[in-house]
Length: 280
Image (cartoon, rainbow, N blue to C red; front, side, top):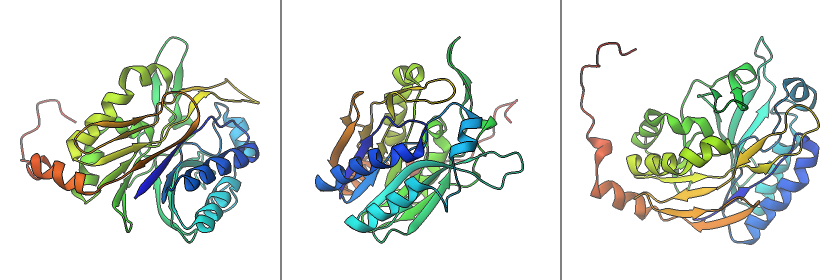
């Protein structure tokens, strides 16, 4: 299967993002991709909760999702909407940060709501409280496709290896990590975390990313790290897209998963142990 990973610089206007993302999807398909992946928050990257409340809709009304479903059906490809922000029925108005796998007929094959939320102060000038705006998900998701079993995750999830281990032990051969990573943590941790998740699980890791300085009509303007990556099951970085927006292709070979797991079958070597004192 040929994958096409999109590296984007979306803004906070979903309507303006529709033609930008559509053009990138079509470029991926034109390059032979049968599996297209977009980054986190493909429909709207914004630091303003009030702006999000004005411009975002539900899954049923989101224009970017409707376009992606149409494009998947038009081209007959699998398409991962890395994540989209949707309004929910949460009592305090929090959004879902949801990754959706779209099948070649345009149907929704799987949904995953981001579990781990980015509540950190990465520098004196840069603080995030994702849980103030996002409702966390509660369940891990795998989905079988004709070319591989996928395990769906989003961005900050990458710091929680137990999630990836369980996805791999449930059969996932390809782990998706769409992201809008901070430049500070990206420079320090992005590559090594993705390589670690691939090495620990013997799986492909595909990480389409947002990049650059994002247009903002309200709130603080955001910057993201870029460096869309693909890591092979033995830990080799086979794609690092740098910082420019674009579409990047690679061919996925599931035999590489079998080979890595046969060489180091650590997914079968868990042993029970007593937790240390103070473990919670």
